[in-house]
Amino acid sequence: MRFSRILGAYGLLAITSLIGSTAAAGVKADAKAGGKAGARAGARVAAQAGAPKGHSPQFYDVLTQEYVCQRFHHLAERMTFIFNFEPMRKALYDVEFDLDLFDADMDNSDLSIEFSDGEEKEIANCYRYYAETMIEALDILADRMEDLDSKSARYLLVTINSLRVADYNAVYELGRRLHDPVHLTTIFKKYGALDGSTPYSVRTAFQQFETIPTITGEDFRTLP
Image (cartoon, rainbow, N blue to C red; front, side):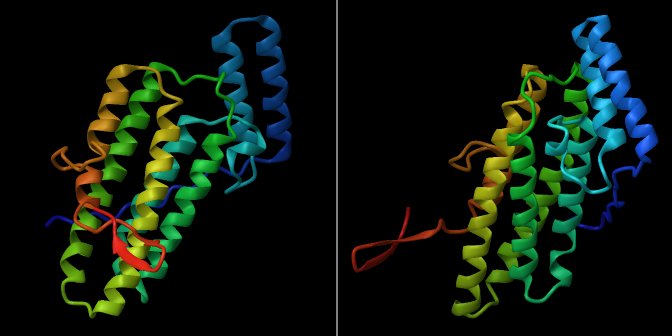
């Protein structure tokens, strides 16, 4: 099972307030000059230049291709190293938390500012890289769970199912912001059908684990 890639850390550039002010002025100039492309490009320059390092895009209400790819690479890196931490479920909860923040950032971004075709293609490639890392990590988790005692396996199962929900929310929130059917197909083929029937997909990898238990009255059962 291939899992030897060590991803480089990606960081957002910290730019001085002077550059941020200049970029913001560029937005106004582009918007005044007219043209959807100019306004969009100006808004993105302002978001990248003025945002403090590590700050979410909701501060500027603009979602950039660079930010989306940075988050996917960061999440892939986190999944790569979950096996270096004890307890492992804490590392998985940290990935889930990052996915929730990413989902919130996308949810709060301006839907009227669209990505270009080239940006959507790059985002699809970044997602595919993240998804393949997720699939490999889940395969390893499935193997390791066989050696756990029932209590530890139960705790880990709940964590994995929480991650499943967070991943679902983030991917579908991203899908709302893409328009090219080719790039959407790239993403959702790698994400996979919800029933886990798509070969080598994220949903198929999650299908190795039971779904979240539910309590109905006094009967404790596992959902099919």
